[in-house]
Length: 221
Image (cartoon, rainbow, N blue to C red; front, side, top):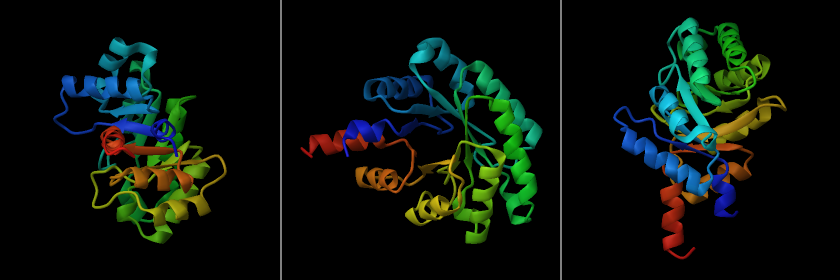
């Protein structure tokens, strides 16, 4: 797989709490140079990125991140502001406690509410698979599908585990035909990225894609 094709599916990510504007600018410049799918950044930087780069940068941000237990009203407010300030994609975290309580309907309704808030923009749903049983993961595949979200996403990258091939293959089996998949967290090699894309993922969330591609090029691969 060509490196340009891999990078076209990458959400170039920087979500560290201490990310400076200089760090964010570097991320954006790399995204422009290497034509990544988007930059995935903290909500507080959306407006500044949009004011600086305009439509040249596809901005992805996070809502209810990273723990997911904000109220639905708070998540909606975050989402509305993010879209107003220039984000085109929102990666929301589900309320994991609701899943653990078996309240799958509540999770579905929250996702529906956020999909309404993003309108024609993209909504990705982070289910934080490392905390869920197989039964719960299957229930989340159904919730994401029923709620009309655009993507199911494995992980925040802040939990106890990241994307696994096992989870992607499970998602593939149980999501609806219009739901895409995003692997995120623990994607640490070019081979990982290729494997997830070949398994059917449409997006890869990682902070290291460009450095990995550069490293591979430097080795003459």
